[in-house]
Image 1 (cartoon, rainbow over the protein chains, first blue to last red):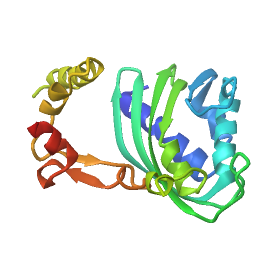
Image 2: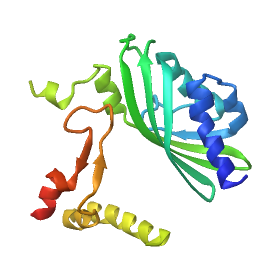
Image 3: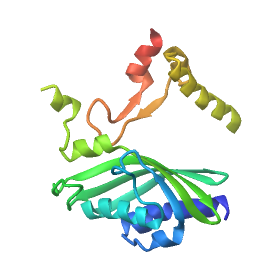
Length: 147
Length: 63
């Protein structure tokens, strides 16, 4: 696979799976032994393989609707692609115990993916969980905390 | 600047930061640098900070 093809494949996580909810695409683009590195993963981490990605997508896809994700940058070298993304969505479902608020949130992040034999074999997720929780009212902003 | 030069500079920022060498970190940034905070964030951690507009970065750099 070319570097440009890897970029397209990395983008399908955002476009096909998160935005459109096509979870089966995970079986197509992620290897059976895929590993997720995610600082916000539940205790014990996400399962390996496409099932782990489907769980991630279900948690966030079930909590939010009307996704709009912009891939602001994609930088690729060798077997890796780094994608800087900007997402907006509406909190219309339960998110890890938080009831829906109807809030439109905007969140940014960077995902790095490693490819082997045309599939993604390893992913590093980093997104702005602090800002997300503040927008949902789950934790205070600095201004609110100082009152 | 070549890609290698940019990579070396970026790596140097992390090395300097790890050593607590903040002046070396700040020297990497142009005088008209723009810092983009998260769009959904709350003040003061959101928006675009411009060094020439009196941001904390400029103030720190002048010390």
